[in-house]
Length: 325
Ligand SMILES: NC(=O)c1ccc[n+]([C@@H]2O[C@H](COP(=O)([O-])OP(=O)(O)OC[C@H]3O[C@@H](n4cnc5c(N)ncnc54)[C@H](OP(=O)(O)O)[C@@H]3O)[C@@H](O)[C@H]2O)c1
Image (cartoon, rainbow, N blue to C red; front, side, top):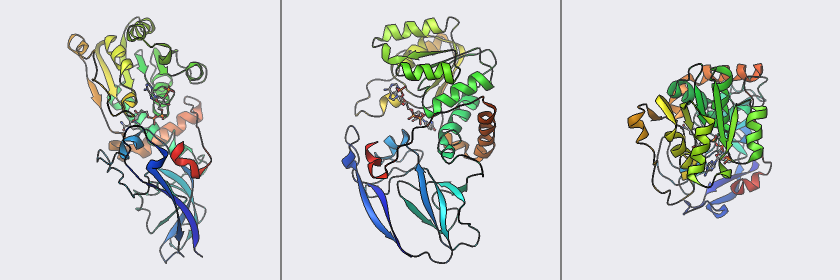
């Protein structure tokens, strides 16, 4: 039986801030399945900062989303009908299904590779702690940051999906002596210290002046910073660079303070500290570690089960408002 299903397409590449009119909602008819096909009913769709660069249309580590394309996103759903001999109705799966209510596939290799979600895994976790953000945190911190027991570690964007996992691995798995997270507002800062168990949090919104922010970083790190896991760039990167130790590792995971503006301004101001305090400042792409995702997801799941990691999720219910979230 054919069904009606909704999907979102990119309607325009944003010029300046993203507008709801940059997306268009469409209802399509999905015809009866052919032999060999199966249909996924989407339950949850990931929403992440990388989308901001995808919708500009430029190819980066993935192809840009073009006007008319279904908006790209990782999503979780359940197989609701199958005429494929190896695909069972009821199996929960994760894939690059995009902003749509139903996806029809002919192979588990479609949609960038469809993977079964293990029995017992909460449906949102493959998009959060066990998804690309959790895995990016894992590899960025461990492979690039190389934390050692006793290190002092600063994480920006620390209440976000990636930063919160990086900060907790540093503190509760790798034995850092001091882990400080940077986040916006007292509520997120309280979550970092009281729930995620970090040593301290810096509310960057309370510091409008660069010198005051840098002073705060100095006070939080009397013995300097050994690892800085940066999701944000901008003023916090400058403040961290001013306080790094010899041979500190600076992990350039993201620069979200620069994404949503046509004119992000000049780059880091304090990078010359790297001459006096030599050490690497290195970017990376989480997806480059895809061949090791299985092993890392199992470790993250174990840490979550042991209580070494926690995470918070924000799920919005209305598909028809996806473009305005
Ligand atoms: N390298 C990779 O392969 C890779 C993969 C995934 C993600 N990333 C990057 O990791 C970063 C975090 O992604 P995520 O998915 O964890 O994001 P997320 O959960 O959506 O968290 C992003 C947080 O960044 C903070 N933020 C936004 N604008 C800011 C600004 N101007 N200054 C300071 N903080 C700001 C906000 O928290 P506050 O309320 O605390 O301000 C926001 O909630 C992004 O830069 C993303 O591009 C990189």
